[in-house]
Image (cartoon, rainbow, N blue to C red; front, top):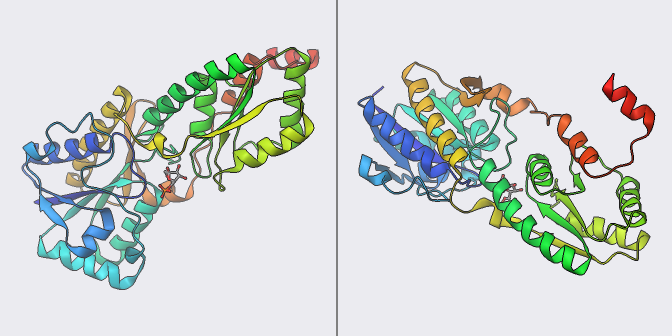
Length: 336
Ligand code: F6P
């Protein structure tokens, strides 16, 4: 292997730049030539490929976004698009790829390998933390910290006006951002796809709070498959608990930007080096991740199909720390 190329694809995530930097510098350390592909698969199809030297990645470790740009490429889903992409890689004699992205990115890389045999190692880059094969994805920690900064501010005004706030966070069909933000932000509840909370349960929670003289409430809602659903839930609660002054805040894309946290910079750097070393060891169609502090490689097939489950302890933590009235039998069964 003499030349590799790195690209970012799908939703950008803070720490992607730190990962690009690690790939470029690790590649040079091992005597490889390293290329950058602009706009992910779209750039591969259009031939937007450039050589990267060590200086091209100076002063980016602290920056959000991705200097290589990102895109969700529809063209790469077509045979014609992938053929063009392959021809461009041949033109530059690229013989290995590092793909920084999520499930869609790895699905594309797998298909591409099956058709053209270009080896690829993936780095998990998404704020959603929804990838099997790594405890954390690049960008997740930063996104959660961004949510926390917003929740802290909303808490001030919620307390001042004695209001209830539904704060919607991203995460596509998972509740990873929601659960961690809810615990860190001291929220009363995290509503997320994995938990299937009924509206009845949500309303009861509020009624219980009101009957216990609780004056302000914070509930975190994962966007789920339908962004904006915090509004719907708020409407229903308003009808049943009219004495509450309810507001909704949708955090949106603010969660995707900003300087990566230390945890994301370190993770991204480790994974970038791991990806290059993986390619050099002959690995392909695997994602490099960190599980229990150890670097591991997981087949794209597993990453794509297996679901990483949210630790059951976390929802329970919110319930206990937020004054839910436990029945005696509940407590006894837990302490057994
Ligand atoms: O996958 C990252 C993510 O931010 C999701 O949490 C969100 O549902 C989606 O991307 C939004 O995508 P877009 O930026 O294309 O609207």
